Structures are given as structure tokens and as C-alpha cells.
Image (tube, rainbow, N blue to C red; front, side):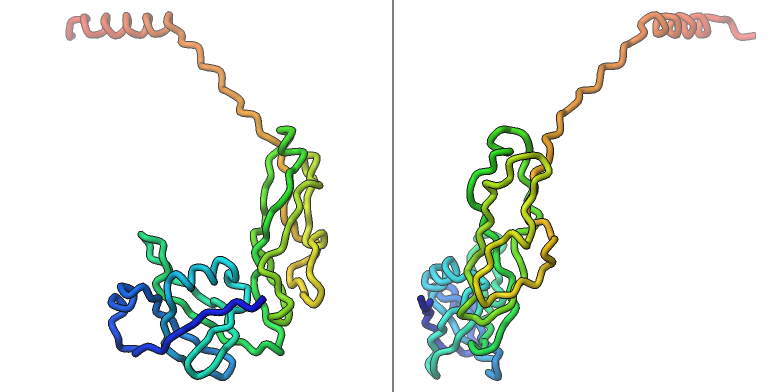
Length: 213
């Protein structure tokens, strides 16, 4: 399925605040021998595309000059509203392998966690891979249903990688593991020696009452 996004050319010197007020996201597209081009995309359209493609899925960017296959290379968000403020689209050659980070999607239920034997620790949340754009998945599933005891784990070598995709991480790298539940040990309250306190107070009073030499 081809993910399409329509873009319009914009004046690089145009006020960005006004562009955003029109429901558009300022952006730039570059790469694959293409000159940097200032564009804008509709906010709602981009959000739908980004939800589906993320930063590893290819997008068919429809420009007035033609169509370019791109990746969302960098996304700047508003620190308060968490809405897109600017997007960098990286144009790629669909016939050449690229290196991207594919997010990991954890699925299933761990018997160890369900039985309160341990806690699931996710060591990796994404994995670096290499392949042709058409072969790259949007995400890679990690089935945690095999994690049934403490210290059981899933390694990179256990992942199901699509054909044509090369994993750049080490096969022995741990993706997820089960750690033992740590019991909280309450420290015993230190016993208060009231007798020593009384003696100390008594000694202090006698010292204060003693006449000066």
C-alpha cells in the first residue's frame, strides 16, 4: 500500500506563524540529488500519514514538480501543544538499500508477569536495519508469551525479520527479559533508650545549677 501526502511549494521567507495558523505544517524536502525545497503540508493529512508510516515507512510525497519517495527524517514538535511545527522529508532512491531504526512492538502476555513472578524489562525499543524501502516494515513484533520464568529473555536472533531486511544489531543483544520482583525490606525502627536521655538531661541540669568558681 502506497502512503501518499500532498505538498505545496512555499516561499522560504514567508512568516511560519501565519502558515501554521492556516492549518499547514512548514517543511523541507531534500536528498537523492534533490535541491532543498521549502514546502508545506496540511496538518491533518500529515498526522494521518505519520501515524501510519512513522519515521521508517516510505511516503509518496506529491509535489508540483512530481512525486518523490521520502522518509520523515526529522519532526519538530511544539513543546506545549505537542503538535508538528516543522518536518524534514528525506528523499530516497527506492532502488538502493537504506539504514533506518524500526520500532519494536511488544505483543502477547508473559506468563511470568501474569503470575507475578517477575517484571518485564524492555532493553530495546527499536532496532537498526538495512534494506530496500519496499521491504522495510513499519514495526517489528516481539512476542513476550515465551517469557515464563525469571531471567528468561528474548534476543535479537529470536525476532522474526522480513525477507530482504538485514539486522545491524548483534544477534546476542537482549531485547526483553524478566527480572525478579524485589521485595521491599522495612528497616526495623531503632529502639530509643529513654534512660540514657533522662540521665543526659539530669546531668545537664546539674551542670547549669552548679555555682561558678
